[in-house]
Length: 136
View 1 (cartoon, rainbow, N blue to C red):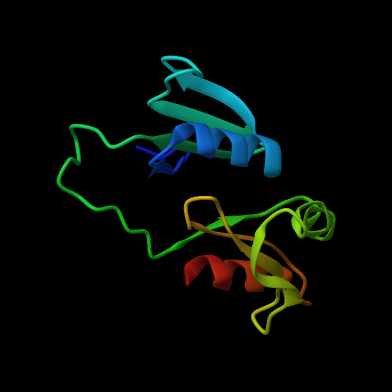
View 2 (view 1 turned 90 degrees about the vertical axis):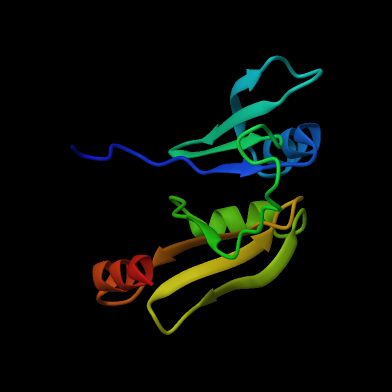
C-alpha cells in the first residue's frame, strides 16, 4: 500500500500563538480548527501545497517532553520572493544563500523554536542536488 502524503503534527503550548504566527507572519491559511478559534486544541494550516498541524499536549503523550531535532523543509515555487516576504518578520537562522550541495535556501525559527528551511535546487544537476538533500 502506498503512502499518499505526510503532514507533520507538532505540539504547541499555545495554539493561539501558533495560529497568529503561521497565518499572519508566514501567510498560511487555516484549513481546520477544533473546537473553535476561542479555545483550540487542534489546528491545521495550509499554504499552497505545504500543510502542517498543531496540537496541544494530550492523553497520547502526557509524559513526553517534545523535542524536535530535525528541520521542516519547504520547497517554495520562488524561494527568492519568499525570502523577501519573510526576512524582516522572522527570526533568521541563516540568510538566503547557495550551498555546496546545490540548493539555494534560507532558514528561520518559528514562534515555538521549530527550525524551518525553504529552498530550491540551483545546480547543473539540480535534480541530483535536491535528491541528495532529501536523502540526508
